[in-house]
Image (cartoon, rainbow, N blue to C red):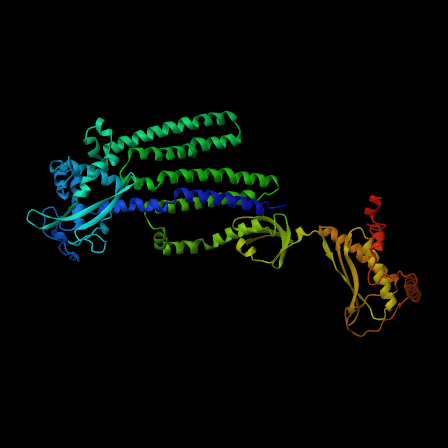
Length: 614
């Protein structure tokens, strides 16, 4: 019986797992350009935890260390340094205090059609544009009253960021201007303010503002504008409806098929397939409502897409691996289910771990840092799971390399037995004493295994020891006759089949036989070996020779000595062979071998099996 997990099958499974893993990586891992252009959820959350405008010193803040960078001149709007000026504008605009927010805009030197009276409207539009088009990292903004000195710009200008406007890059610039009393402060430059109408035309609410009141876009519910809730609700309803309409015909078709295969695909269509279609469609539609950057960060995390893809991957595992197990069991592998089903669980865990790490990476967390932080706990878990994992890996090795299979008779270490089961933890072997030994897989895989059941033939190699006193012609006679015996026996393979006068031993003349018996069952081999041994004894006796004692003890033999007549007969036969050029030493010619093959009667005459076969 064969275990059935061939290397080809294992490679097919591993290739399938690798393919699904590559798809997960490709779909979930953020592109480099995307990662640079948009903030992550982590960055959004961390920035939200910090106050947008710097708080004034309170009783609880008095013990904090002083700032190394100067705060700039005193200003009621805290516009003395670039960072505070940007924070002050965003704070005022977030609180919908657009009159105050306009104090952070340089409303001088505006183009025709724009004037200072539009300051609050411009501040509102500018806040909407920044929310949708520019992520501001406050850490990059200067805390020096003189601004950045190494940015290649004049000392009175600092760049906050860049916004793409239909292929043209517009710089968002802060400029140091003189307050009415001559004190220098920082405001968004008049050149930047002049670009607000153009940017709002692209990033604003467009025609929606014609149908909905302003509060619809400014009022927040649970931290999100009302228009966003309405837009997401519309997108979700449309995506659900379209996903159902697209997948319904296929679901109806599969439901009417009523086959095991169609039922499995029906579960795919109704479950992960429909959900994946909904997620992809919703991700496309949500772009049309032009959400703010913080919502893009949520989309970039790909949480729903991660769930959908893992769900699909789980279905693939549940679909593929049981089918492999059934196919292998049909081929005679009773242990396929023991291996394949736990393998499916392990593959699912791998997918979940990969997807979770990619999701954390999309959120903005460093997976390397997380893994390093879990190092001590992971080390403890690894030490606890070391032995089970070693046994599992060893089980996979035994299934893939197949040194032994269930039902094989083998030698392992210093014991012999038949393999009854290869499990995930250990291998059970029934010994010749009919006891069962369970060996952990990690130890069994490292043992020297000799599999007797995989033999194509069995080696027959006895050594014949003739006593000293045997004449050379007697030896030649025995060599020729045993060669004839080997060639003629139907159970002995003729290639190779040889006997050689190996050498002169301390107490014997040594002849060595090297041949293979064409059987795989050891019991049948013993029957053939017994027949060959008896026939060899007859040939030795017929030559008038005898077997030597395996000893160097000096002894005096009384009784029957060599039969002179038999000795003369063997010598006469050798002389006849020599005269006829038929002394086939050292080798028989191929035509003589072909003539002798299968001419010997086996089982020998007198055996009940011989009578039954005749």
